[in-house]
Image 1 (cartoon, one colour):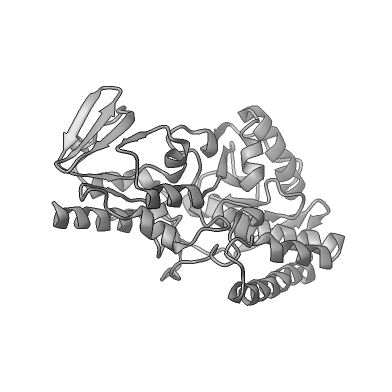
Image 2 (cartoon, one colour):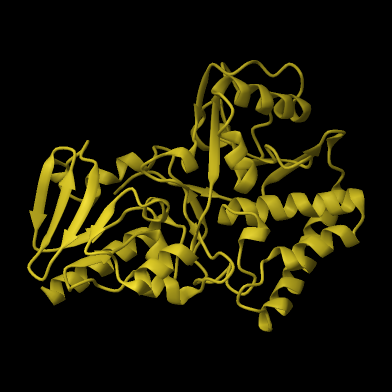
Length: 348
């Protein structure tokens, strides 16, 4: 689309604890302890029971290292696994949580945001906004959507409802979905990763690191520094899994208060109050009910395959939850949508 991109290096991180910046030796120990854990996980995956949770490997390792070192490993698990898969190790399948193709190339940030990509993907004048779908009726001759603005009919449909919405049952299907689809929806997990964007009156922190890490008690342990990315005085904090769901009970003011306590411990008491705040609450959003999918204990790539099967040769699900190679990603969602459309064009 010709939009600018910013290569993002996750190793460019400055870590802190409540006692101040982490010494280099402690920094290296976190990385080596986590690398050892990854080896142990890979070994355990070889003979893992289908319903075994990832926590069956992570929890004993945290305990084994003792209080302080164990807590630093817990931080590494939180920022590398819980934040990545939007779920805690107890909610992730040990044999399958990291299934998928290894992505080619590095990570890129889009400084101007995803919204700029939409016009490049298709004709904006064909987009209908404000239409809330209540029911999807499929027959051998076509698909009808019942919305808050009446009915829309077509020969076929690609349905990209998020997995969380499918799980909630807020959109009815007539006839009921086939058993394989219902089972896939029930088995796959829908996780939560929430973001808190804070804009400050000025950049009052180091501009070199792309990330700030805070080894503490689970909250606000990972921050993205937008000063080197966009030149803007913006910090982005993450919470995932159970902590992310708890965070949704807090008002924006309470979230800022909680986050600023951590930020001032890292970046100094002179850090000014933010002037603008944007907080996500994905598991409460009725058009999402979660951030993206993960492999819950008992689920497997077969569930994603089953969710992608055509229904009456007229309806196909698509989205990141249907991507076997790249679940939980934007490119996974895009390629899944293209595959679904190509399949329908062959079928009808």
